[in-house]
Amino acid sequence: MSKPDYALIGLIVVFVIFGLLMLTSASAPFAINKFDNDSYHYVKKQITHGLLPGIFLFLIFFRLDYRRLKKYSNWIFAGAVLLLILVFVPGVGIKLGSARSWISVGGLFSFQPSEIAKLALIIFLSAWLEYRTVIKHMPARETLIRFLIILGIVSGLVLLEPDMGTMAIIVFIGLLLYFVSGAPVRYFLGIGVATGIAFFGLIKMAPYRMARFTAFLDPSIDPQGAGYHIGQALLAIGSGGFFGVGFGHSRQKFQYLPEVSADSIFAIVGEELGFLFSALFVIGLIIFFVRGLKIASYAPDFFGKLLATGITGWIVIQSFINIAAMLSLMPLTGIPLPFISYGGTALMTTLAGCGILVNISRWK
Image (cartoon, rainbow, N blue to C red):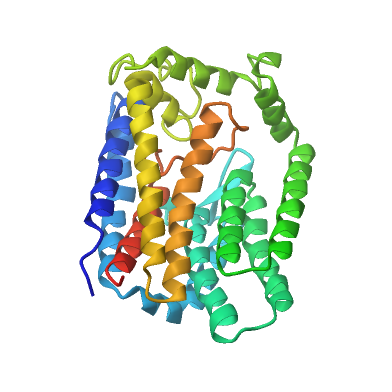
């Protein structure tokens, strides 16, 4: 066993600290109005519900031999599916507006099962694909059918919440692992085309999704309606210029930009810290991607290779989708920016995944 990837650990620490600082700034105005002048409400909750349990899980997975996860991968996956089902149980699942994405635990705290499902799916598919493709060499066609059933169960339950953004991330994770496992190119391309058609169909079926897509094509069509969110995000980023207006000096966070502490927080990064720090953050993500792939390439077994690739791909793909949405390079998805956006379950699960990734780096 060698030393862990200290460069990756340092990068994770920087991301977490940067996230807490930006959340402190972005959430303050809304928190003051909603929680009796407690401007640090969201930051404190992020620490107690996300950071502290996340650090605990990071240390557990860092110390635990990652190969032991194979033994429990079926149970981990079954538990994640059960949690996704419990979201729809009255009295257990929490309904916010028209969506059911949360589970309440005795009214004391709540968590988001779909975030846990991302990591659970990565662990399960890594073990399952290794068993079928490397150990047993099972027929590719049979593996494809079973893979689609597994991915359909998880993504279908998330879509029913409904949460199409998270469903998209889950589908991308699954396809990434399926491709890296050595899937025939014709199967992979076929799934890709079918997935694209299915996504467009889902957009057409829901008026609010179609409105977001139309606003992406031309935000000026409905600047006070569907185009308002992206218009305010672009205004925030454009106002930042190269060096930004200064940390804590954002104007858009004062009830102008929707979801300012969650999905839209990168726009505040651009406004307050400018292009320079925004670019540095993107460079940090690229370094994370390179370190993660290096860990995957040096993993001692195929399970570790798939696991490291899945975790790296999940965090980086989700980050760039969020950033691209804020820059109007793709439609708004409603998914959080890893390490930065408000969300205890998301931060906790991300740190747990990072613990597994750093653990794999010790076995190169």
